[in-house]
Image 1 (cartoon, rainbow, N blue to C red):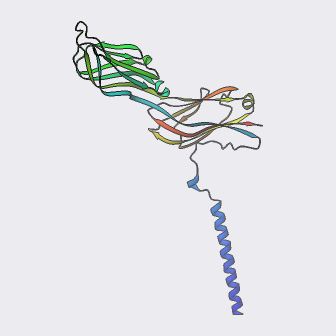
Image 2 (cartoon, rainbow, N blue to C red):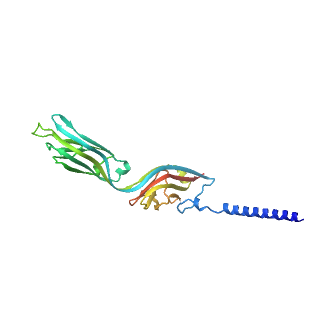
Image 3 (cartoon, rainbow, N blue to C red):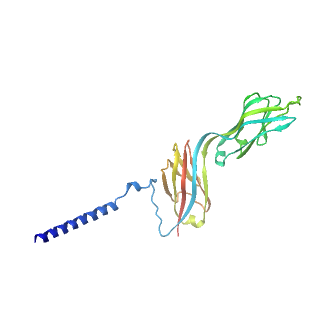
Length: 281
C-alpha cells in the first residue's frame, strides 16, 4: 500500500509541473517583445482588407541634404602654356556638375598659380567659350570669379598664352603650378518624384502610405515632405518611417509629385523609399 501511495504522489507532482509549464509558455507567447518593435511615427496601421488593391511605387534610395560649401571640380598641376615661333600650347580643364548640385550653385571660381613666366605676352583664360581674363601677370595667383549663370552641367576652362607683340621673336611662356575650377553652393537639394494615377485609382482612393529607412544622417533637422505641393510631413523622421494619409492629400488623375527637402545644414540618406496607393475594388 505504501508503494501505491508513492506512485500516486509522483503522478500528481508530474501533472502539476506540466500544468505550470503550459501556463508559463502561454504567458511568454502572448507578451509583446519590446526588442522587435518598429520605430515608426504615430499613425493608424491602415491594414489592407480583402477589398483593397494596393499600388506599390518604389522610389529607391537617395540623399536629401542642405549643403553649404565649395567643390573643386577640375584641376591640373605643373603645366605650361606657350605662344611663339615654335607654335602654341594650351591647357584645358573640364568640370562636370551634377544636376542636384547645379541647382544650388550660386557662383564659381578659377584659380591659377603661376610658378614662372617671362611676361612676354598676356595670360588668356576662356570659360565655356567666353573670354574671362586677358592680361600680363607675374608669378603668383590669378583669381577669376564666375557668376551662377555662367556655370553649366559641363564646363571647359581654356588657358593659353598671348603673342609677344612687337617682340615677335620672343615666345610667351607661363609655367603653371596649379589650375583649378571650382563652384560655391548653398541650399537644399530637393528630390522630386512623379507618379501617375488613373481616374479609378483617385475616385476609389482609400489611403496612401509612405515608408522608408534612414541609413545614415548628419546633423538631423526637420525634413519636409510634400505631395502635390501640400505639406504631408515636417519634423525629424525616425529611423524607420511609416506614415499614412487620406483624402486630405490632393491626388489627381494623371501626374502627381512627391518632394523631399530639408531646411538647415543637414543630410539624410534614405533607403527603400516606397509610396503605396490603396484603392477599393
